[in-house]
Length: 134
Image (tube, rainbow, N blue to C red; front, top):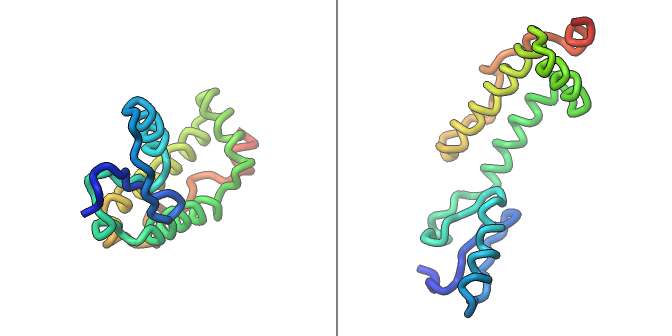
């Protein structure tokens, strides 16, 4: 068990222990900024509770790469414009993207059993060319 005066945070895959703060307001302000970081580990966990952070990184990378096989980050603006204008094909692509990332979070919650194969999501329902012509 770690010293309760220290805050146990996983930052960028490295477990660090912050110094004790005498001013509770300063400590809470710093701590609040850490919660927003990926792979946050609550202070009541010990290093023995930490799943290998590389598992989370691999899962995110697999989902991101699966998405990138169909759509580039530059093409997201096209989807966004289509969604704003209620274009049917753009809405279908957005739903596909949402389903991919919903599945990512389901798998992340059970990281020790998570598959890195996202092919069950299926192909993106429309090509970029179809979105451009809509």
